[in-house]
Image (cartoon, rainbow over all chains, first blue to last red; front, top):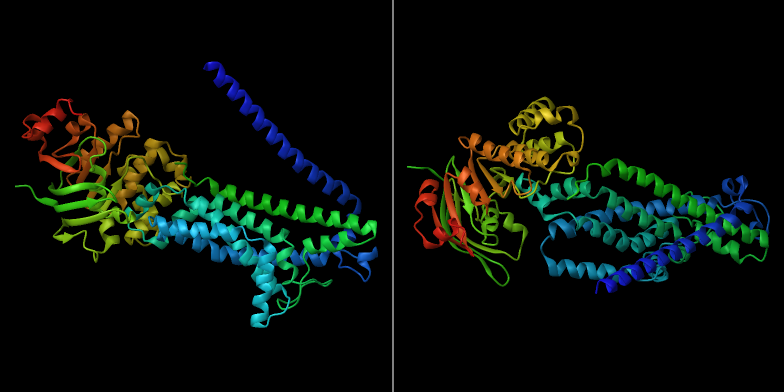
Length: 285
Length: 252
């Protein structure tokens, strides 16, 4: 019996190590190939200028239009989704506390719409635009991406907020707090680091998705200067450059992917730092 | 004749499939320590939570009956639940400090009570920390998060916070069960010291603790009150057979 336990333990340890190594390997290969191919093509000009005529056939210019466009669009959508998502997640956990059937139903529905492919959001957004007479624009892109990341935002926050113990809730109520106080002062403080992770996850999805912005945000070689005009995004920019028959332009696609990766990295590190500042006040129950 | 602080009439609590409290009738004397005693799972904590309506948090619990405090029924749906809860400080099984600084844990309670002005708040914060015997240990780190305190210190912080809402009643649910012996003794002694100003209700399953601090005892078993009365009579000369068995440690 003892021997069997030992063999079992060894087996699972090996399996776990193997799968960890496998995942790290894949991650390493992806990052390596993006860096290796991207570093060759990246240049100051590429980061600071918009595409000139013929950029996609190897002429000069850069992807500033897509960098600025993606940042504006993703930040806009993330902020909007946060402003809608946080109150919803708090409502589920504070105001609906104890109503297990209803809460389970809401979670189930959110999980379902989380699974809808982003191209469907794109199509839905497009239908919506036609309905209200909106053209492909930054605004339409932001609205569609917001809808797309909203379930991700809500459910990730919800998973953190539901770990707040009932005891903390009881302690807060016993001081005479009302529900809004409990939600915004206690639940959010206790969950700051998890909320930041949720925002980050949503931001990553927002900036990395091509399908939802294809019909809604459109594409342009210019910098965005109005909510009502089309806007370029990095994923679409990568797609167009990769589609080019010219090898140098294809390399620039990797450089653009590198830029996208670095943006996500910087935003991650920044928000981690932010999270750490607040993490100290979290009580470990 | 003792003054009654809390009077409970025909209190019943049903969960989805079972009855947790069965027709509870009891009186809790003012400015005394009342111990609710009984084995685990007998409904002691539920009884305590009915008093400040924390049972509201759990919609599966159906509460009926009357809990009278100052002639007002706590269970009345129209009762001002926030004011009501502020009239009772809660100390739970393990400390639940708020996720903020040591200072703000108390200041938060004070602000809820309606205290205004930074100077006044800061004076009161220090005062309540002193009352909970915590001030000397934390005076140099009031701006540090409460999470950095030890469990014993956290429980004293919770006591300070509970006193800061200026309650008439203190509800304590096995307040020393997670604490080291020194912190436990401090809590017990503190209750003895402040009982002239507060009505204190302590839930415990530890007989020794009950003997040490109780002025009045309510003995519960399987959701019912078996016996209640002054501590001396309860421990020396119990009326009920079940009480006698429990006191002799032969209860099962």
